[in-house]
Image (tube, rainbow, N blue to C red):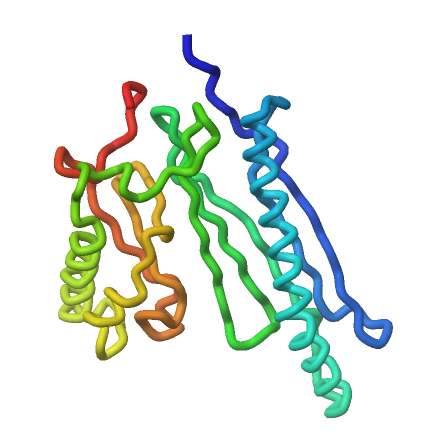
Length: 227
């Protein structure tokens, strides 16, 4: 009999931290990340991953966001201009929980800290082993995964440009290939999604650019209990 699947806790990991400059709170950060039920080795491995992620996010806030927030506060005070405490939040969304697979992505958002930035990161877990699964696991062996996904992204982008529903970098055919990362993917009910960070292939107004491919016999494969 196989091991029982890991299950997410109804109580996620939640942490908050603030930074002050001159006795004034200039940055508030809040993190909400998934956590597993139980105390098994697999559950501890899963939870340790996201605790380390939370610590890394707070380090990013301290090193990158706090100096900017403090400078904005000082400039506003010098000019007697309106000012609000900067905020950074990191949360998550489960996109698929099926066939012993858990897929999700996290997004970090920054408020009152121009330029506007949204950061996304995705993980797909094997709930039998608490191991992260690579993109190649959802395609046949030796499949040209990057080539196939970049081609699909180019076709979608071209159709959107023709319809006037999206904007892309003038050299989008090149940037879609150069900015592709096999870590930037997640699974959902409608298929496999892969995405590009803000500013990498399109103007800021487009945000994070997300493409998808439906499940099929040639891949991507829909996770099943028989996997």
